[in-house]
Length: 90
Image 1 (spheres, one colour):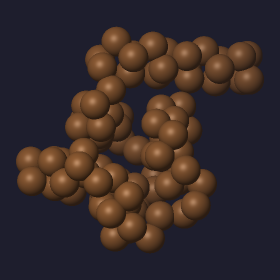
Image 2: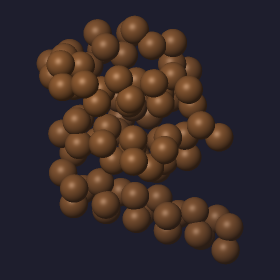
Image 3: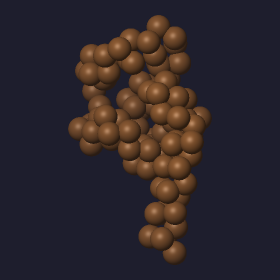
Image 4: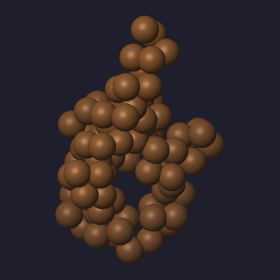
């Protein structure tokens, strides 16, 4: 299930000016979107596993690039999320 407002945020951050503003003041930008509290908390915590269930994979990767997460860290977290999912669903 996708989350519209998180997806909209991630889409909007594709504009360089928006990405710069987000890096400068995340809270100010997040306040513009009516995000569910748990979604906002996941964004603020850089919770790749949680957000991977709500966001298109391409937007997700781009978002974490904009947010300053290294490629290696993103891949480590996404692989960890996949392993957790496999353990639950066996």
